[in-house]
Length: 298
Length: 107
Ligand SMILES: [Fe+2]
Ligand SMILES: [Fe+2]
Image (cartoon, rainbow over all chains, first blue to last red; front, side):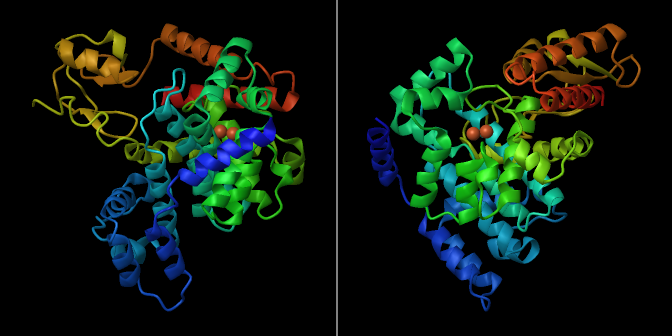
């Protein structure tokens, strides 16, 4: 059963486009210490769709820039290679999953709302935990539940069954997945991460966000995403298939010497960052919601 | 200036603070006079509250409104935490989240 499911997932994923070559080229460039911002800009501008979305995001409140950034090279100079690279990655993932779907009981807009909020919260918590790269942490949070979209796209019948179990029996999504498929979205997401050659910390975040103590490469990053998922669900932001708050993993709680007072102290900052990150939601379906509502009649 | 639930809006009221959707796009600008069409579109866009010009203490909710808001927050938290509420850590977290959401709602 499990082997058969895995085979269908792998076959499905094999049909997905690889992440755009522009990302691969940019990543390679960024590893070269002698590279200039203009070189990076030139590579990215070749993909206009991605470049314009990246520019829109760098000018959003999330990055808090005082002045308008109008070219990719400028973005690299002002915000740094790392932020721009992670933005290209985020935009590319949105593009890969921008298929039209109508699965009853699953609202993809609210799914991205959960994911984006989780990305913002993971970034805040990562800073507090001293994770090396908070920008990568944002992408980890953004992608943590990506396995669910793989299931929605390639095993839709089973996905619907899982949703039905969640609603009828009131069990968490992960429990329903195990029952229907013999595996859960973390494992499914991991296959995608491998196919896309995502960096190991991101692969681990996807694979272990429900079980962070198993992480080997970046325990703090995976723990940050695990906590972010708990807090975002507790605050009721977005919807990822069920609305149950998962239990905090006690091993990482004790290992990181956390307490409730510390967590409460982070909530305001998390709320603010989540609000700012909502500009990422505009990546989800441009045309949706456009300017049909009256702006002003003064 | 007073803060009203979208369901309490009436045609003719004047918007006192720009209304945006979750993605930050402007739905109604400051100074716009509301009509039936605008109000129903705000409802469709899941906008919860709107600031309108007029009497009422700055930003204050009536005691009944505060009570109702707290009850609603508590109800939602009970539902979301129902599978983990036996766990003392999660019970404690739920109380902290309650305080945070009430504070945020009051801002
Ligand atoms: Fe998950
Ligand atoms: Fe999640």
